[in-house]
Length: 201
Ligand SMILES: CC(C)(COP(=O)(O)OP(=O)(O)OC[C@H]1O[C@@H](n2cnc3c(N)ncnc32)[C@H](O)[C@@H]1O)[C@@H](O)C(=O)NCCC(=O)NCCS
Ligand SMILES: Nc1ncnc2c1ncn2[C@@H]1O[C@H](COP(=O)(O)OP(=O)(O)OP(=O)(O)O)[C@@H](O)[C@H]1O
Image (cartoon, rainbow, N blue to C red):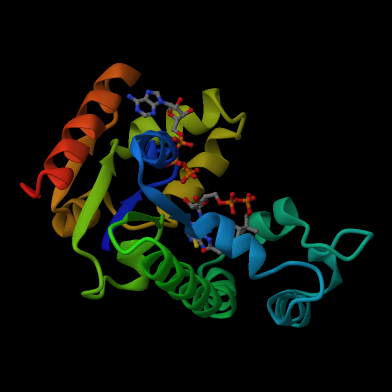
């Protein structure tokens, strides 16, 4: 099995890329999905969050109130670091387990680990290739405002809570420019897939 890490800032187009790679035959593991599993009702992660942030970050039925917690952690670096310290070790554990499972059941698989915070959490050497979805910060803010309905200030906070474009480019083996037409993103993904399948990458 080969494991390709796919990273990029918020609204950079990672989902578009991983969806296309899945269509082409890759097995995708998504850190955002795992981070939701890590805080399911009844999980130690959710309990730790409730202890650190108090009952205002829980909904009436005891689940995580994501907008409430987001409002806290995207405007407070210390709060975000505390949340990361609770959630990220569990995400890492779940990702390792999922990838190991894929490796066992499909030894020839090309696995994609879609991980928004690869720079922030530290790149180790377990990836055969690092692919970065590359859209500049201004484009990402614009997408968050126009496509996801965030207030501009909120969008800017989220972008500022992440690594810089330069830091992500510095770890990239392959850059996919996601600022053009959708078809151009797809064409770059298809070319990458051909390179990986044929061993050129
Ligand atoms: C703060 C939370 C509750 C907000 O939930 P919400 O549903 O609004 O956002 P969602 O989880 O879908 O994340 C959307 C995007 O925000 C960005 N983001 C999320 N968490 C963080 C973080 N801690 N630091 C920087 N960016 C982040 C990522 O680009 C992510 O793809 C949630 O993001 C969370 O629990 N974050 C901590 C876990 C985490 O780091 N997840 C991201 C990668 S594993
Ligand atoms: N050329 C392009 N390539 C990729 N996405 C594009 C392009 N042009 C516009 N978009 C839009 O930009 C948005 C990118 O969002 P997407 O959910 O793919 O990003 P993401 O990196 O997965 O975000 P998040 O970190 O929030 O999970 C989508 O709404 C997509 O339709």
